Length: 157
Image 1 (tube, rainbow, N blue to C red):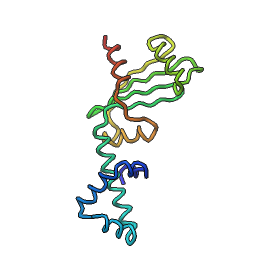
Image 2: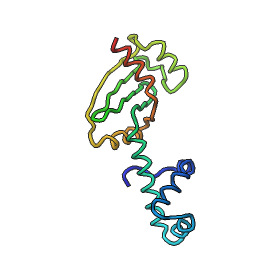
Image 3: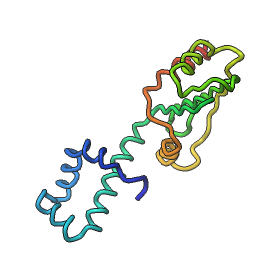
Image 4: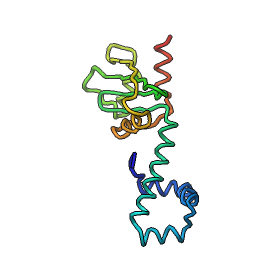
């Protein structure tokens, strides 16, 4: 398995897609029930293959990621060959970006000496989707990139 197995909730959400996946392998409900009962290891393999297919699709389409911690905000723009980053760090240890108040403070102090901003660009250490997956496993989540784009447009002015 290349990534991780989807959760039970994710499988439930993707039930129609999973049915189509099984159908492409000529597996109907009766056959699937039989596989689960008689060959659970084969059923497990099917779940893993489906999970990898879903992850591969999500990661291929991933364009922006965000990761928030108490004192840092990491914004990523996933390019085909590299990943661009904007890292914001509060110089005030009392501020917590994991709270609504902390995010409001960030908004009010974005371009002041209270915020250290670093811009970066890095080639992927491994293949693109694997690198993005590692960021997600570390707590990053997919985003629409609005915050990244806003900051980038101000920097470019």
